[in-house]
Amino acid sequence: LGLGSRLELSLLVLQQRLDGARIACSLLLLPEPALKPFVRAGATVFGQDGARAGAHVAAGLFWDIAPILGVSADASLEHFPDMPVPYYKTYVLLSAGVQLRTPR
Image: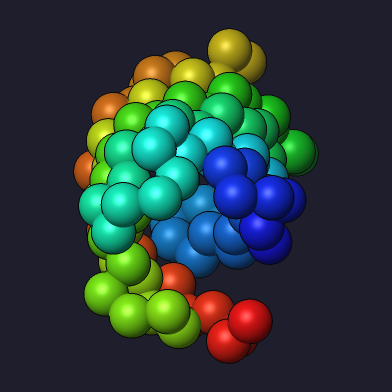
C-alpha cells in the first residue's frame, strides 16, 4: 500500500516451517528513478509454542520494470528475543519479490 511517493506499508503472510505474518513500512530513499534503494522496518509474529514476536530491518532495491510491475531484492535481519532452544534468536535473510500494481 503506497503512502505517498516515498513510503509503502506491507503485510506479508509467511508460510514456512513456522507460519507467521509481518507488517512493515518501507522508505524509498530515491523515489523517482526506476532503480530505488529502500530501507524497511517492521515486526514479525509466528507460532512456536504460542505467538513469538520479533523485529525486522532490511535494506534493498526496488526496480520498476513497468508502471504495473516491479521487482525487489533485499537483505534483512530478524531478531526474536524470546526464541526457545533449539531455534536461533537472530536470522539473516535474503529475499526477492515481485510487485503487481494497479494503474494510476
